[in-house]
Image (tube, rainbow over all chains, first blue to last red; front, side, top):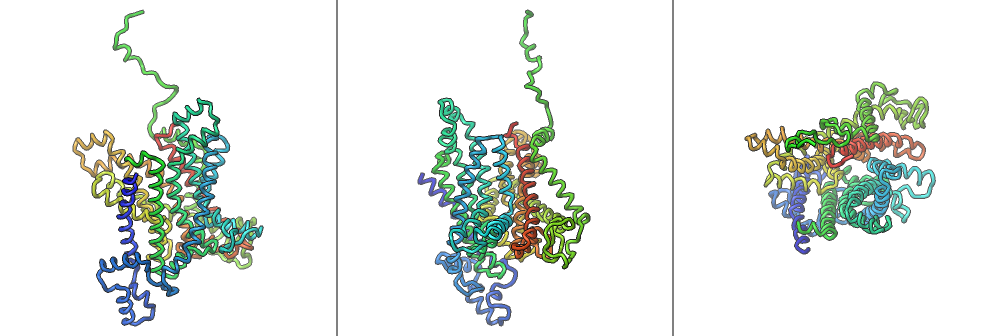
Length: 306
Length: 301
């Protein structure tokens, strides 16, 4: 077990390395001189050169990269071009709203998706199954921003039950998390259905039935546990999509999170913030995948010995 | 009873199971595909969409930039089936005209991504060793970013615009196709007929394109269809965020974004473009599901 954990841990080091190079080069791929961008449109040549020195842009590329990594490890992402505040502070303030939004979206999406998936699998090829699966494919096909706007229209504008946006009370969470989780719920419903149907063909299910177990017990007690293993992986991967989705949803609901910060930064060409956000999102995604991988190993002992 | 020789048994025709007919892979595919009514309907809808993409601008009752300030933000009526927007433009016509744009952007971007990914996947799967490692690590880097984030990053560098959306979507489609094609390449490579071709001295390039590529084609087609839906969604999302198509373009995402300010008194301005996106993506997804089930040899009737 420990060997498996270590192997996976070591496995992400090269990915981290290349991702950091990719993000480091990101600023260098922007057309034009980053120093001029920082110094501003009407800065003199001396000003630009001063900024170049200050940012270390006059040093060779590998030295710049080494400094970049050193600064990141110390939590120094530079200053935001827009607010002139440290990027770290800008992002730290936005982290928790996005975290809680993704968290609640994931919770309802997993629970709801699982119930629909299991129900569809047990009613295979009946109208309940068709309804569930049509709902799921619709969920995957819905443009999330449209769903969000329609929910705002119905529940906030017409009925006045829930706020249109912002993050004031628990009520503010309802519409954004439904919107954000819809696609994930759909994917999980589809996936858990097919996974459960696969497991239901196994011999031990037949044995369970032959012993006279109630169907509910066969499904929820025996089959589901094994059907869950691939679903766990899928759920983990969906986290990445939630992170991506939150970028759009936060704009729809005026959510004070990382996604909206990113969009604001792109329109302002605030490259230090964009760079830090890309790194943060990638890091989160890599860590979630690692966690899923490890969990997979815990759930399915066969994986560990491959 | 006459004495029976060993040879006679063999000469008797083999028992045929039921009324299973021998058929070509194409017939087999069609037999399986047409059973799926939903996918069939979706496929029909996709064909209509492509037709609309071609003839849309000619049959639209109004022009995409036909302003009418006497009829702004009007709800659906006999004259304006989907109502009018803040400039009095006919939303239904704009959706029709925008069909071409949405289909073109998604087709082109997924096509570019598929070509790049297929070449990388074939090379990776066929040659293995360090080149496989290199390509797969490259994919890992791209996979480390959620798709839309990568697209936003690329647009942050290149600047907003529909052309850059195409580039962004094709770049993040590359690793998806590369991985899928690599794994089917590995399967096909292990078959006896590829072994046979290799042993009669065929060159790698010939083996890859003549013998392995056709074997990977069905998984490429299925994923191509599935990715089309995702590409339309991503392009629309980026336009909605103001990073893709810019107003006054009749791109669906941009139209929807423009309607946000009028949600209170004219929700139809956002409703109809969104419905168009939803139905199109739904059709591609249902069609893709049907293709997958019909092409997957593991799924029996």
